[in-house]
Image (cartoon, rainbow, N blue to C red; front, side, top):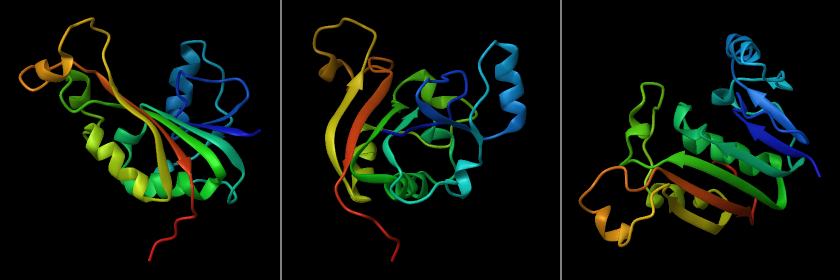
Amino acid sequence: MPRLNLGSGVDYREGYVNVDIHPAAVLIYQNFYVEDVDVIADLNVGFPFRNGVFDEVLARQVLEHLKDVDMAVMECNRVLRHGGLLKGVVPYFKSDGAYRLAHRFLFSEYDVRSLAKYGFRVLRLERRSPLRLPFKRYLDLFLWNVYRTVEFTFEKKTDFTRA
């Protein structure tokens, strides 16, 4: 059951193929006593793996850093086997964390749902908050930082190829 962890950084996971983009970033992480990544690859230019080799792709806090989110999700489809899972977390567009300089994209739950068009079925999609507030859905209409992230799980249902 091979699993892939994209943009692993300080989130090195046993049992996963851990991928990060830049050797300098790996050196920085090593200074924090993080284990080495398994593969150094630029996720902006495609994934260095064969088709259909992974049962799960984990993309936690990485999609917002990429130049082309659509291409990355298509690549996730390519490397996943049929029925494989794409699990991810992105910063919610109405949170302070979404506006860091390294972030190229902002996401609402609707933006994340639209990524399923690349051959996926949505199994789970929810905004997450560390706050215990009543009426969060309504407060979010008027306030910032009610939700911090959007978490999702997609299942690969079909192969997707660019037209």
